[in-house]
Amino acid sequence: MKAKIIFFIARYSHSGVPLAQIRLAKAFLRRDYIVEFVMGYVPDGLEVPVINGATVINLDTPRTYKLLTPIISHIKRFKPDVIFTAEDHLNAIVAIATLVTGSKAKISASSRISPYRAYSNKPFSKKWALKYSSILINKRIDALVCVSEDMAKDYRAIFGETGHQCIYNMAYDSDTLRKISEPVDDFWITDKSVPLIITAGRLCPGKGYPDLINAISTLRKNGPIKLAILGEGDFRPELEALIEKEELTDVVRLLGFQENPLKFFKQADVFALSSYFEGLPNVLIEAMAAGCTLVSTDCPTGPREVLKDGKYGYLVPMHDPKSMANAIKEALENPTPPELLKEAIEPFTEERVIQKHQQVLGI
Image (cartoon, rainbow, N blue to C red; front, side, top):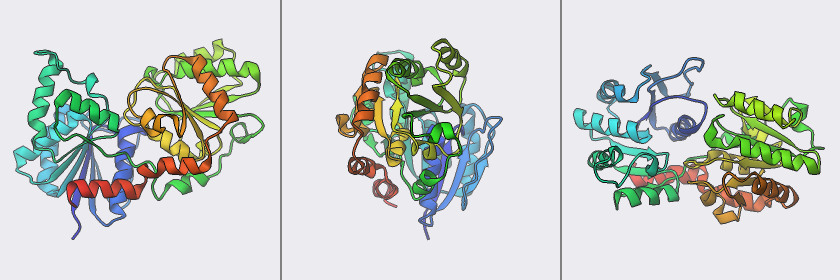
């Protein structure tokens, strides 16, 4: 009988950790594992996702620290062989829950942000105390996983040789080609007479969208160009005001959340990432799978690793619209060859990622 696997996430959304974990859960389901997927909270306006073949549970508990008791109950009831959890605060709670219940389940705990944002080596600071609390709790965790090699190095710099290792997010699975091939019913997007630059992610300051919009403002002076931004968030009014100020309403469009962004990537010439920080940006791999040439800020962590120091795309400094504009121009004139794009996505394919998890956990 295949192992029983339970996934825990703190909060559901249409991006980031939840989608990565759902994709991983589906891959294990395709290999006949028994899967339960537990979410701490589903915000108003979002529906509980359907994962065919898995039991999906919403605990309706917005605060992560309040998840300990319900997680204990689920571990007692489901009796998992393996637990997948993501993000450090939830990872600690899940580890404590297994200690309380006496569960022998193997735990894979994934970290998604730089440890320098959560921990510190400065003695007696709050982040220092969190660090040493985590060291004790981490002894219960079987696989301390980071989503990029650079992030794993950062964790080892903070925590020492604790066994943090990289297992990439799965960004190319058996459903990817179907999503890429779906049609887009929007002539503004599909019109090939004007180069299309695209980006995707939550509309928030950390994504650096004003830099990208300013880069497009520079580029349009040299000829027609258009930018599509996929995603939603609280930063929308500021971006709309900037687009209006730069007189780019016919050039830049905020297309909101899209259930299938890959079909939009397929229509684009260049995918541009303007972020100031990432874990490992799945959208870069998805965009390469759809045939886009990449331009990305060299932010911590992930882009330099995904692009192999510029082998698979163009890297630019953060907070530098001029460099972003120059790189987009170069990418349009010298796109990345398809054979290099195929080579670039290989480490992030379903088979490679699942094999790594199975190897590390012994399942």
